[in-house]
Length: 181
Image (cartoon, rainbow, N blue to C red; front, side, top):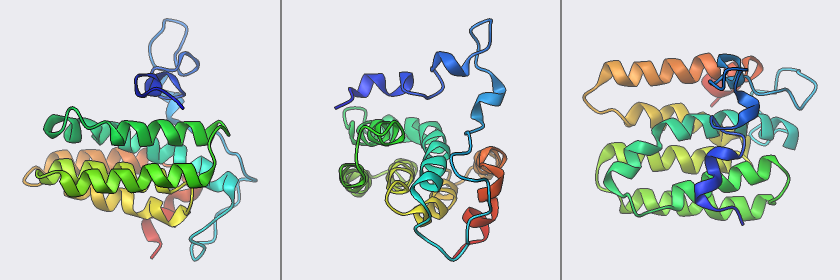
């Protein structure tokens, strides 16, 4: 099992491989490498291949990490979203199977039900959906939807976050996530 404190060292923004020679984050590091053949995914296929799901999980983890402070602000002692993101990272490395990751996604949704603040609820939901992509790619479509709910009354911040997500999604999945359903 991966310690919650290790999440940022497991391929996330603090990963040395994502830094340039001066030790600062390389802006190109948000690009997730293609695991599949690069073909556009079938927009009707909610499952997709495991390679496609791995590629999407890389993006959904990055999205969830950006929103996690909203959850932590209300529930600083609740580490279920952290544990779930760590499990998703372990899935990317082939260390956890889909069933183990799904359990962590369910725990995120339970954390969301226990939160009171709409921003905290939405952030926990984004984490849960992000992690659930390991099981079913269609969950990726819920990430922008819950993100939009994370900033009630702050349209500017909401739009900024949604724009970041859209700019950082692997290009071949743009239509899959944003035009699917």
